[in-house]
Image (cartoon, rainbow, N blue to C red):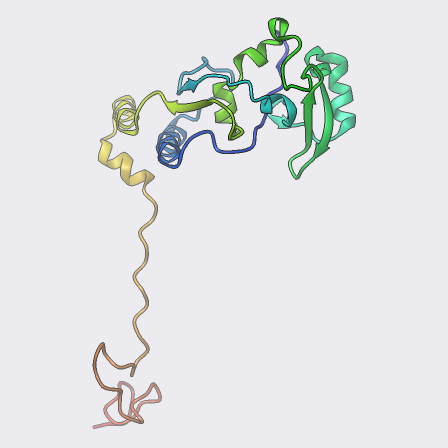
Length: 215
């Protein structure tokens, strides 16, 4: 298809907590040196897992994206339909803080596609790797998921070799800044398990205190 197809933006996490941490680490390393670009080879970074279980959620409440931007107004949508035929499959059903929400006109009451054999190419590809790279999420009922094609250790090694940088140096560059130590207690505060400071030994400088008048 020559024209850029609309991309759905589902609603809940694509992967579990542990898998999401792994994807975050891999993305962080890649983005630090070589951010992925749109339109790259499908499944270059991630492998799609699972299968469609015909829940119909990806057809009944989705966002549509054009040029990596969610369609926000009905005026914008009507203008796009003039030039991009695939948008005519959809109709607005509401909006949220991100933009318009849509449903497909070809979904029947049983949430079955009435043009399944002739459905658009982007429907056949869904969910695509671009879906994940754009930060989209899948409905909890969806049978699909994603996992990184390479582990964090593999990406670290590949990137270190490509950039001729020691893996340890890469990890240091990606690590969050160290947590600063807690501030010291105020002068005159009792040490752990000790007795209270004597009266008059506070910051004003009693006898023997730094800056005070003791001899």
